[in-house]
Image (cartoon, rainbow, N blue to C red; front, side, top):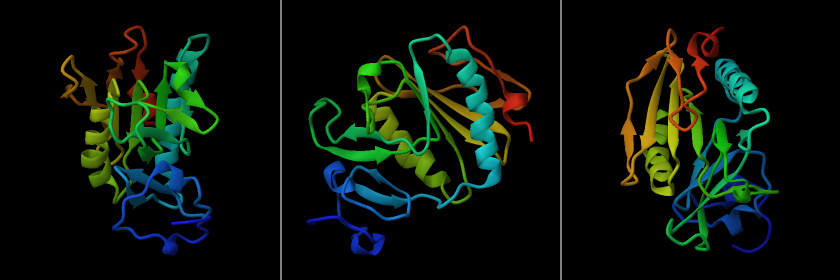
Length: 199
């Protein structure tokens, strides 16, 4: 497909696309590419979703001050190659996690993050749980994301997955709003989930 795309209806949702094509799209709808296929994002996240992202990010920001890692919030492109073992293979996955933490700053450029962040947090919205629970889980695991959290507002809990030595996610005990969450990659940091889930 040549030239700039200004209307999402010009795209074929059954076709695979690359990051190079993604860069030519200039329409208002938010989309993600997962293994080359298009997925629409919510046009504007719900108020509760935004509150949760803010509450988590406030605690993360305080912890990361004067540390070498950086946190970013959607919209922020995380680009992953089609072949994870070949960093230079064409990018066919472009995601916008709610929150991501990157400790290898060489992965950062003006367009976002080129490679797997160390920690990704996704806050579920109604209707997108299938994408987070299945597609993104697989992509993040394959890419080598060291830790992945799925925040479930409806149940006021967090599902935590940590990459093991074989490159597979291992689920930890789910935590609720009455718990403290200590990231495996930051053992000296505790997130107070009662504050994170506060309304």
